[in-house]
Amino acid sequence: MIKRTTITRRSWLAIGLLASLAVNAFFIGAAATDVLNSQPVSDRGSSLLKYEVRWLKTLLPEDAMAEVKAAFDSGRPEVNLHLEQLRQLRADLGGLVAAPEPDVKAIDAQLVRIRAEIGAMLADTQELTTGALLALPLEDRAALAPMPATN
Image (tube, rainbow, N blue to C red; front, side, top):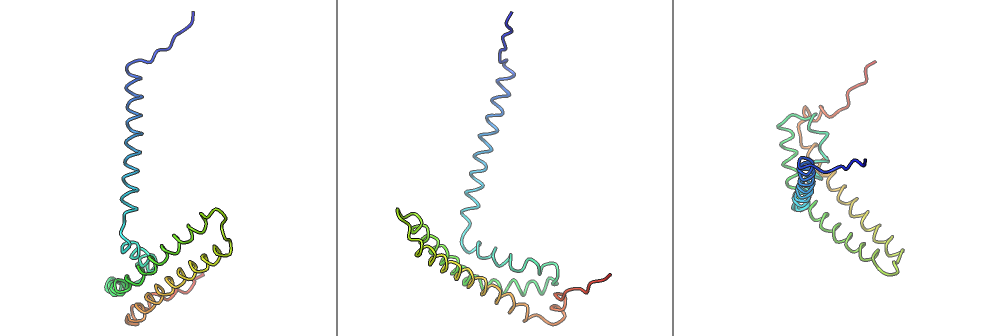
């Protein structure tokens, strides 16, 4: 005798629930991605500046960090200009790469321009950081010195 397996009503409900959860997870993930990708350029620039001073948060007192953050707020427009320039340079690179017969020399030259722009952006950010730190009183800056190693 052949045993026939049938899908019971309970099994159908479980399958439906799993399918519903999978569809919901997909749409929630898509919505979250859309929200994250729609972040304004000015916020992207601020995250670059936040990255630059992440190490300072544990070393400086709150009032000193407030001064550093104020200096960063003044530097956001420059960072945003670099980001816009990088966006254009990368779009141009995309056009070069997508050509039917890509010009490798032009691509290499475009990569050099992109690296130069990234370097300029990092130099400006580091200059801003260093300037903000040098404007702090000595007692605040002293916390940035490495601790001597103890054995």
